[in-house]
Image (tube, rainbow, N blue to C red; front, side):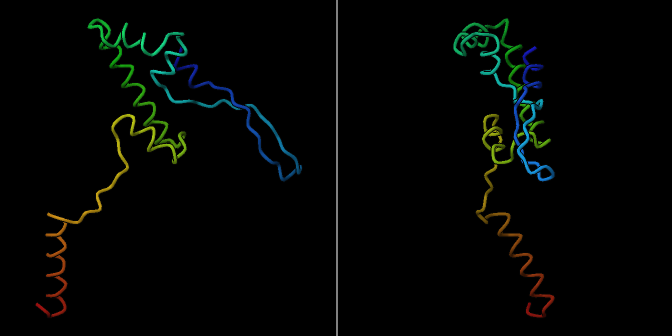
Amino acid sequence: MYKENCDSQMVLTHDFSSKNSEFVSKELKRSITYTIEGFCVFAGISRSAFYDTYANKKGYSDIVTRMKEECEVDARRKFELQMIPSQLAGLWMSKYGYTTKQDTNISGTLETEKTKLDNILNQMRGDG
């Protein structure tokens, strides 16, 4: 029921109709991302009560793990389907251990490959 609620949020949107030269409002169905925090609000319990009651108890740990996995898969799906605005994707995905950071330091293997490429180019030019 929680996931159905997340996938069926009604949102009032506004846009300008150039055809009629007026602003138009319409209620559209939108989807929000699943979170443990959102589930807690939906269920009417505090986050701390959820973790104290379920996450730290052996009998419920598999269920809590499954909930976390479903939240991660949902966020990733919505990111890949461009349902999450791209400017927020890094924020959402970092919550699940993903990063957009790229290593710009050329060293080790990359430096070796660059040297090999330079040697090949020099041979083609007749310099080497």
